[in-house]
Amino acid sequence: MVLLTIASVLSLGLGRALAQSGVISPLARACPGYSNNTDVVCINRYASAMPPSFERQSSTGGVFSPNDTFVETQVPSDPSFGLVKNATFVVFDQRGSQILGPSPKLESVFASRNDSIHEGPVYVPSLDAIIFSLPHQGIYQQQIIHLNDSTPRLENYTTTPPVYAVNGGKLFNGKIYWAVEAGFSFPSPQNGSLVAQRPGIYELDPSTGEVTTLLNNYFGQAFNSPNDLWVDDQGDIWFTDSWYGYAINVTVYPVLRPATYRFRPSTGRVSIVEDSIAQPNGIGMSPDRRTMYISDTGVTDFENYPADGPLVTATTHWEEILLGSYIINKRPIYQAQTFGDDGFHVAQNGYLIAAEGGGVTVLSEYGEMLLRIETGFTVNNIQFAGPERKDLWVFGEGEIARVTWDLVGMANE
Image 1 (cartoon, rainbow, N blue to C red):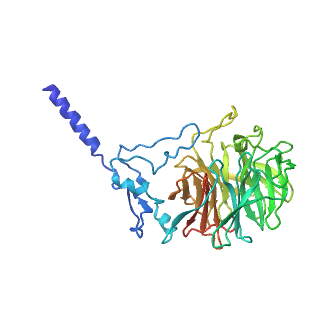
Image 2 (cartoon, one colour; image 1 turned 90 degrees about the horizontal axis):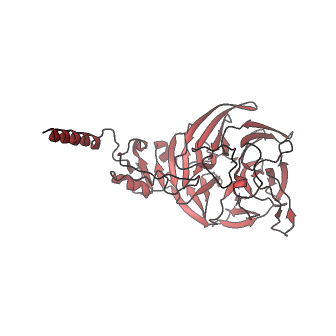
Image 3 (cartoon, rainbow, N blue to C red; image 1 turned 90 degrees about the vertical axis):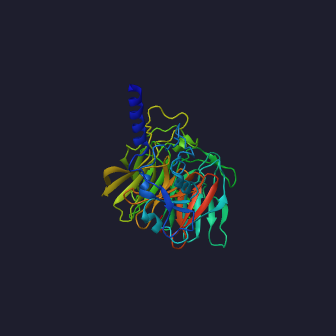
């Protein structure tokens, strides 16, 4: 009798567990206006309460696992989640579907090297072309995508003098400003002569191909490996200096703490503005120039990581308010849902577009997840291009693709 009573209690408890209230069903559905387009799927209430049987893999060892994503989460109790696995555009907020336009499309344009990252893409309107870099050991030139033909055309691009391992770039007043990682001498791809270089900030005149060194030291100490930059309306250059140049073996062991700097080319003055982020990476500014965004990719790891360096297990966008020459009110606004955010841009309406793991993430200016574009390959950087800045070019490992939608990029990005 006692055993029967206990068994009854356990059965009742199990029944309550299976019938938990609040679980969202279905988790996914066809988006309004896209009922015949399986490439677009909407997530109900951010899938904030899944059936308890859900499971997601984790990336380990500081290396991104393609299965460690929201869309690869296993939800055996809800068949609607199968819609998510097959979609390209995953909408979390109605503002996400509003920027897609009536016929969003992701198309592969070029196959590229899968043993190198792709960074620093800059659209040059006067050339109707995108100049970008493969910052990898042994690659001593950049590449250019010509967009003024009926079919985009990809070629190698070499400056005078050549520059090794460009990682970030922005266009300002007709010039391209580069954050350059490499600190070793290298053979010129033009004639094989040895070119000496230090990590720093460089200026390219895209009309002539001439490059000028603007900054390559902090009071006599070489920078670690400048990663990305932003040029404000006064021409001051804000740039991140992380340790990734050492990670890919294009410069020496880092000495300076990872930090973000402000450089004023008009005077040569450089000053540190932030040094608490584990590995500062992408950097951008809001359209009103009052808010700065910096991505932290301290989740990454690599061999021979300096023992006394910071290493965190999460990736966060940081928001910082500008006040004169300083930044204040720093606060986290978003933790990457897929590994970490590399390069990112700010759209004309203030939305943040980030290269994140195996796709592109669109956030509101407050860090709210609006939309996810699943590319199927690891994305390193992105760039708006075209006369209206509505084409988003996606640069990743082994592939370069283009997104056609209704979101518009800022002119100087």
